[in-house]
Amino acid sequence: MNGTLTEEEFKKQCKDLVSLSDKINDGWELRQDKDDIFIVRNVKLPVAFREGENKNTISETVSSQNGSESDDDLSEDQITLEDSDPYTFTSTSHLITFEYHVVYSSSYTVPVLYFNAWHSTGKLLTVEEIWKLAPPCSDKYSYITQIDHPILARPFYELHPCRTEQLMGLIEGGDTYLVSWLSSVGRDVGLSVDIRYAMSDVS
Picture 1 (tube, rainbow, N blue to C red):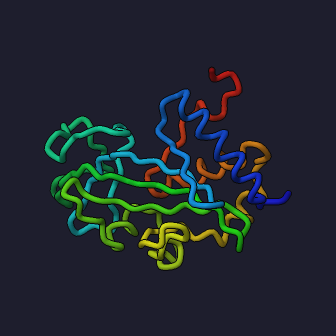
Picture 2 (cartoon, rainbow, N blue to C red):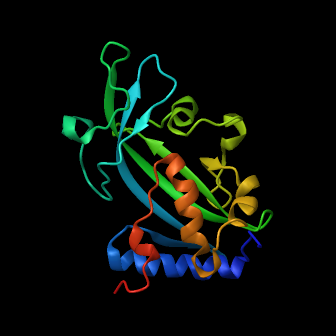
């Protein structure tokens, strides 16, 4: 099964995804720069930064598209911590803004996920903090890298697309290639995909 996507298929599926996103109020936006089309979504997620641990935790209990919450607005029931033994580590929770961009790669002929993340103060997360958010990886230095955005020409983190073709070759994508791919890779960096994208009767 072919795990790639043509640029025309990518553009069509971006438009379809944004159209459905508008119906369910999910926050994806279509952006265009000359002939290039990409999609963008911003979310706010509470993140627990663990001292002395090699992993941070993104809580899936709260997702705010355009909320104005500050770090202090988070209550204890909004924070999900794994193995939350206060004697093994201490944690502070921060509301982090994630900005996700999906851009087409003509070199790999697949979509690529770019993102940035910052505190409510505007301070960007460090690459070390980003690596801790991602699942264990045999080579995290190549899995998530910081490079210039191919369209905006400013630093973003990138989920490297070298394994996308192989992954998508195992998934029945077709007209839902983009949604299937986002569902597979987005969760690695806090991006969840609403189940309604998989429904054909959303109106």
